Length: 363
Ligand code: TRP
Image (cartoon, rainbow, N blue to C red):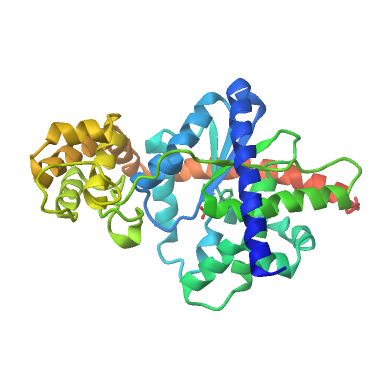
């Protein structure tokens, strides 16, 4: 297929996924307890406000609606494009803390690390027989990550979507439809998980083993970084959940702005001032326009004070819970251990079904 044909195919897949996501959200509203949710993150650092509004908030909502939930801390995925695991233990534990501080309840949501679940990793072998090299090579997200990593393509990065399919499908073998809240960049991986589920079912066993996972696309507005660019740790423009009030105030104070005193919301012409307004809007529930009118000709200084106050007030309860958990790391480790145990039970049952479907039970 030529480039143009590929683009069209990618676009068509995206539109179909978007429509499926929309319809599924309606079904979840009507009957939340007939769905399961699984999603995850790579433990590469602390969570920031972008993560909170982009994904964590909706996970907490799904959890509280009564879906069965699991979150994978994808520690093996860290080495798809990095060479070191030096800070991984800290990152994993802090991630559990961030989740819980934001309202993820380990009684309702299984939090686990996929490196601890051998049965999940074992699914990799049969799944690898179900996708071709060409299908993996044309995954746009894998390609983008390879370019960003400045490395040649490792076999782990090439098979990233298959590994992620293991994370998802181990949870999708009990007949209940599984939704996967992800950003647009992860859609190609969910697509491969759907393909693997379908091919496995048609090739092995008499009854379908896996249900096809459904990507849930976020419709939350993306919170920009303090400089108007995408919020990203590497740009140093992110408000971290774990920062102190003082650090947050300083970061906001130092963020770039312009010299026009009158504050207006205009993301095109004034991206930096508008990013500050959006940050204040999301953390107060007010609209950007209303806030801009209130500040009026007070200038960037007044706006920044307002943003800092709003963010710190919004994050105060999260930071309070963080502090408690920080002081009790043993409890955090215990929560992870219990989550891994629950995930392993499910994975063992899935692997048994896979063996059965493949006629590989010998005694
Ligand atoms: N690849 C995802 C990310 O970088 C993280 C992830 C790993 C994931 N396993 C998953 C997401 C399973 C959803 C389902 O954001």
